[in-house]
Length: 329
Image (cartoon, rainbow, N blue to C red):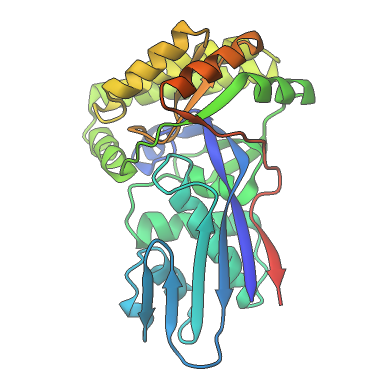
């Protein structure tokens, strides 16, 4: 029996520039942080029969890999040449479709468990690229490389993506004092709004490919803000980080009418009136988690105000381990 886990992530800057439709033309940059909310995958080889069982939000029991409906499990098993007498079960600390990179985290965790089952040791960078290949090429999701690399490496991490897709991974040069101030100033609230990120990302992909000036211009600005956010955090300047988040969010909304909605805008403006410097919806947009940055003296008031408006805060810390196998016996 194998049990593996990988962390979810909160994107801090540059989101969207990790899609090949953008980085293949302009190169990309992402700054993101893995958090201590995890996806777990249990893999086992039952001895009673040769069936394949996959348990997630639904349950599948099939005779062949080709019959599996889950569009990440099927290509992963094919790629690793696994078939027959196999059980795959997933559990998570947060729901899917909430902007924390669930599909990328899923495939990274699955691959870690399956390679362990095969007694194969591979470098973390190879695992991340393998996960990208499965989701982006074999499953055909309109995804970028961000989620897979953060789930694999963990940490508060910079991703520099070259035009050929090569990813350079480096930890953010941030002090322990700033990490603590970040945790005290940056809050996560669950909106209870779920959204299919594929719709938003497909729209961005199509717009980038056809050279839509608004979308491409917004992504250029997003990358620029990502570098400025990196600089602010490395300079121990949380207030500037908060104001840059506000610019990041307002710029991001230029890319699609699906990224926000009147309810999200209402919550965001309420947060600004309550003292927040800025924030944004995590991930592609449309729902999920609202991240807000405020002076620590306003944190209690912001928390009470947004909870009164129907949002639920999710406490968090950072994860610096990345994907790992917890159990193998």
